[in-house]
Amino acid sequence: MIHGIQNLNFFDFLATVVSEFFSRREIKNITITVALRQILFTGYEALSIITLAAVAVGAVIVLQGNSVLASFSQSPMYYSILVAIIPRELSILLTSLIVIARSGTAISTEIGNMNINNETLAIYSFGISPIAYLAIPRVIAMIISVVCLTVYFNFAAFMSSWFINYLSDGVIPSHFIYELFTTMSITDLLMAIIKSSLFGFFIGVIACYNGFKVQSSITEVPQRTIKTVVNSVSVMVVLDIIITSLFYLYLY
Amino acid sequence: MANLKYTKVFVFSFISVAVVAVVIFVMSILISEKVFSAKQHFKAAFADAIGLKGNVPVMFKGFKIGYIKDFELQEDNRVYADLLIYEEYEKLIKENCILYKTTNPISSVTSILLLAGEGKSKGVKPGAMVYGFDTPEGKTLLRKYNIGFSGDAISSLMFKFDAILEGINPVFIDSTGETLMRNIASLDTTFKRINSIVYNVDETMQMVNSGVRSSKDGAFKGLAKLDDLVTELELTSQNARKLMVGIDETLANYKKPDSLAIKMIDPTGENFIKPVQKSLESVNELLPEITKLLTYSNDQTTNLSLIQEKIKKVLDDFQTTLQILNRNPLINLNTDVGKKNVEQGKKRPR
Image: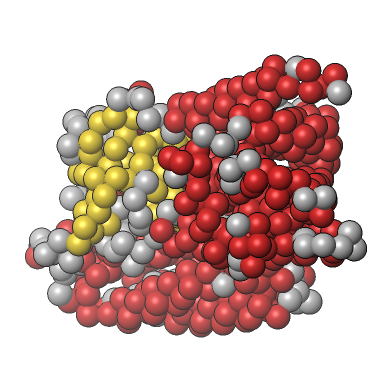
């Protein structure tokens, strides 16, 4: 089985993760504790860096947007730009990048080291599927974490935007909220949630896949970690283009 | 490790706050979209469906007062749309209202503006038809109620061009007088020409999109300046409208044979000659300002220069047209015949 996992290509691994998630036999091996701890590490502990990035992005958009749009007599478009940039794109991309850097690499390294120490083999010898026990909880945790962090990112970025607007133009909160939510639509929110869920899913799967690919040498671990980062970012960019195109084709 | 001890608490709080935030976001969006507000159905008629799509907002003085739900092309080649107006704004839909489709050339976002005319007017009942500016009924309402415009600079500019066009042209086309119409046939042709020229400006303004993206402050300052000029042009068009009312009266009087000669000559000049002269003077006063604008914006980007070239051509043609008008003996006070008629004519009691 372990040998089998190591020989799976990415798409077979992906299919195995999905099939085991829906398999009655394997579902009992998916432990809540592993998932909760992963959410703690990936989501909760990343809150500070996510908030910092969001505050910076929100503030920069206000400063740049206000200065440029005012000279075009298009200040009301500021909210359209804010919505187009933050919930639709930047919140998801930046959150995912941070999660890849912090947790994608960590998962890959952890599972890789477990492979080298034959811990995954030990799990398998107890009759437990390593994918169900190690990969699926992490993938689920990754999805939940990325979605939640994206929500926090949006909230922090909007707060920061308002605060800078308040300092520069004295914009009151009610006016900001009215303009923001008049410009924003449910589709924007839907896009953010769908994108972040898929990004979380693929980051988790790619990290686990590269972790399981480590075979015997400790030197493989950093190589696989690098591959995790590169593959995750590539998949994220491609997915982003596809999802955005689909939304603009059918929903906007 | 302290975190691990309270993993469940932290994770539960982390997820629940995010879920609450999402719920607040969703509710706020739904409330701002007035999904829970009662709406009244109206019908809207447009000449075409360009820019129309489901849920296009209907705005009034910056407030969203409703939206277009659905639209279809009917056998009479018009586009009819279902217009949903929020109950709190239902009173705004009156007889003197028209709908104006406008697309922001920068964001390419189309919105429908509800424009109301001057003075008091009756409200209309739900289900009534509200006409678009581009329909004949809408154009009639525009002239009848002297409907004004409020919106962003570019939409304002485009509307004013449209309004000038509508103000100048129709009376000449609709006139039914025969002999007098022959006399002013050249005017009719002239205004049709102005019609087509000014219409090109609409197309020109669409190019502002690319022009603005490639330039900086200058583009919009130039446009803002142009906006001021167009405001003045609009005033001139109001004069033209007054002139047309005069022509209407002249044409009506012309149908009475006993007063034919004097009404044709217009001895006092009050009905016809003076308004035309005033209108021409106003337009002529604008020409130096327009020249200044062109000089000022001479060094803008390629696209803007192209637009300016088009505008310059329009204005040149317009000036030519004015010269044609000035030379027309019917309205030119400088001609001996005109002066003589004015001096010798006696006003008859009507």
